[in-house]
View 1 (tube, rainbow, N blue to C red):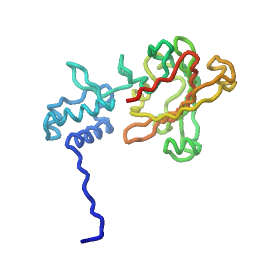
View 2: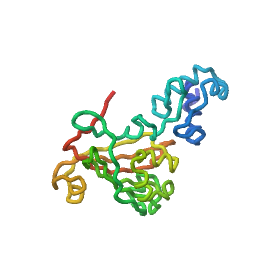
View 3: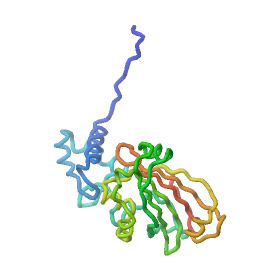
Length: 249
């Protein structure tokens, strides 16, 4: 008997293989956010599989939040700009005391170009000194400031993003909707780290609270297709009238 280890092929169900092929089509922008994908019958013909196999693949992509089924209309690529959906704010877990989710008002404060320092380069997986775009903004609920954010983006992907564009987009959709519609970058998932801090003078003034009051510091890294990090966000949440809700299952 040979002492060499035997490599056993990993079995992948056929519908998972079709899911992977559809993911490639999504990543290649063959089907863009908000667009309807081909029917299950057409996809079954394309991939030479049964309609049921395609349906299983679509079910998983819908459960992952990448596709959206619309009764009687078809299946669409999910978009952060979807009206009436939670796509645009699904990463935001700040809820008012009454428990009713609200769409915040985004108030852009600054947008500038910089060179990636060691930490930004490591997190965004870009070269040290590579161009990055930095956005600072406030989020207001019912006119009251609740979140101040500093957002770091790879400059090569968002080279034309500026304060004027952010201001013009106010009221038209979410920040992620802007990145998706103008730059073709869709945020698929995010990781967050949360710790307690106290408000310094600058952020206390922006949030209209007393210096030294407790805040939640929420650091988020968001990823697009291929598990590529395309956003590093540092946020300070005021919980004077809100709480952070995390649903576990």
